[in-house]
Length: 193
Image 1 (tube, rainbow, N blue to C red):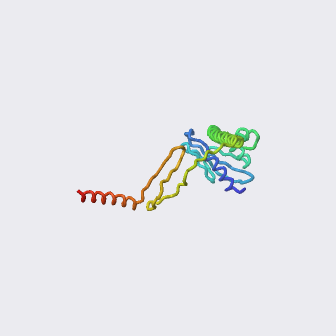
Image 2 (cartoon, rainbow, N blue to C red; image 1 turned 120 degrees about the vertical axis):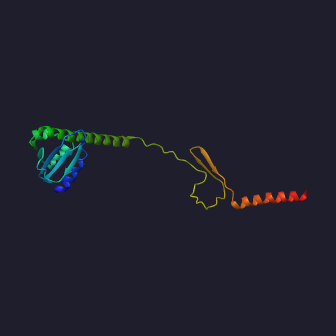
Image 3 (spheres, rainbow, N blue to C red; image 1 turned 60 degrees about the vertical axis):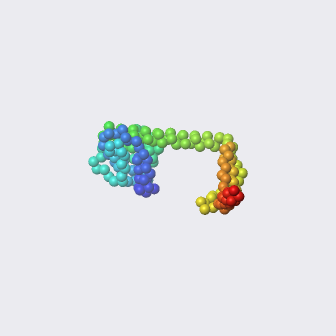
């Protein structure tokens, strides 16, 4: 894995970190050793995490660790304190600002781990649930697409969820013929009088 592949993975995780409670400016330079080695920084400004692939010379905290250790911390497998105690992480700088950064990253890692566990449990529940019967709706005549200039020659009856919906149409030619019959019959009646 090269530096940019490692950086993109770490950046995606760090930018999800909830730092809305951090009201102070914190700049953390992170030096990754071994696989994907290189330097980048994570900066908290006004409750927003900014991660960039550059040195941060006036940093508040400087961390030196392997890619494996960083990945383990970001996935919630170990804490910053455990990594420092085991010698996998060297930290330099302001302890108070480091603690704010550590707590925010670890809280996000724990919530993501819990979310992943919930997802796994839901998938297992779905797999073990008995299949449910799907209810179908039948129609007397299939409903087709009708364009505005199409003529419907017969009534269409459709049953949907036990409600009957009917549409009746009269051909325009039949309507004219019916009107013409009425008018011609009334003319004949008036002539007979």
